[in-house]
Image (cartoon, rainbow, N blue to C red; front, side, top):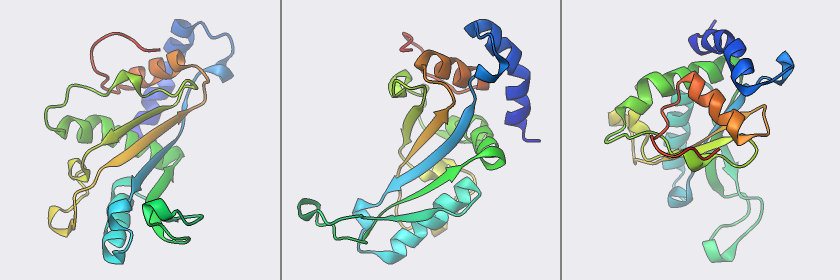
Length: 183
């Protein structure tokens, strides 16, 4: 069993008591994690898009997919079926392994890291934040990178409350910035 899963199972009674939840089935959990990269800078370069896809696949531990434009947008010089991004959705074991790696290895490697912003919650208990470069992950080979790019990470929880989502992620060890609580 993944370390993060074991940690969550040991935290469930504490979360239930601190949030005042009556039913065990209502205890918040992380449902899935989505890693996405917008490739607007590389729409016409298939080698670069393949490189981004390989990098995200290595980071996530499962194959990433290339997202294509659904319709043309002249203002952005985007045509239908052009690649506009790369994404991967992690669940269960892969999600727990990635979350553990993110908290214990990758985020501490960020230069001048002062914690994740607390205002990344969407009002429904889900949390979004961005990373500026992919090099903080140990799987990324520096020599194989064609271009440094950022990524967006979305953590979808089973709760509809930002307060409960924040309590869950903080209990799991997410390093939030010190300051006032937005939840």
